[in-house]
Image (cartoon, rainbow, N blue to C red; front, side, top):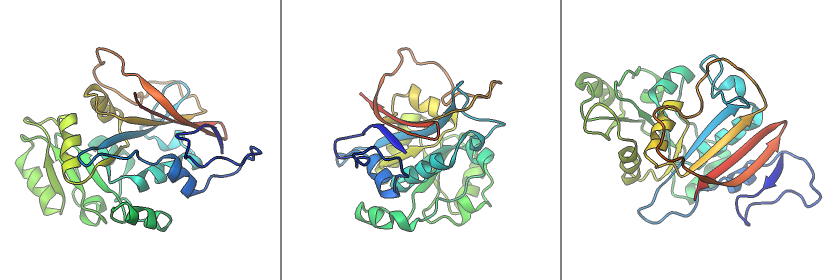
Length: 260
């Protein structure tokens, strides 16, 4: 992997002679470390993949446009987070399971006061989820279901019966994206990572609560009508982010952009 420019001056550099090699998980974790947070602060980053022609999926899933290094970074970003925030449609399409503990990150998470694995928070208005899945019945950290106050009461009861924690983040059935971020933060889940899908990311962008976008650019073309990485209504004024990091391997670009 070759670094084109670093996140910070403290980011572990590549060898001075420019040798191409695979970065260690520790180096990736340092490169993607969350910024220092104030006592009441939180940081929401997104991790998405896109083809050269803007597709976030192929045949409804992101895996076909991903790659081995993309999955290493995916795992690293999860290992740094307190919570992974994901939309219900993505849970259904991608077959989400509980986040697992990884020995390579155990000491780092313990030093940060984190449990062995991040919690998963599923954002849903309809509560149309299968609560018999391992995501709800056997996670290392309690799965959260983020919904609105008007969510179907029988589905709320089913979620709680399965062991999930229901978080109300909206006055109606819909979820208020900004409130969802705050509700997770007050529960101590301040290092937040969203993996989409595009509709959920679009909600975070529209609410102007996204602090960082980690975007893998896949060296592929798909054409067709696949979704972009963010969907939903357009913002009035485009949000500008500043580049923080670009890595390259096997034609894939691994970028990070942060709020200015």
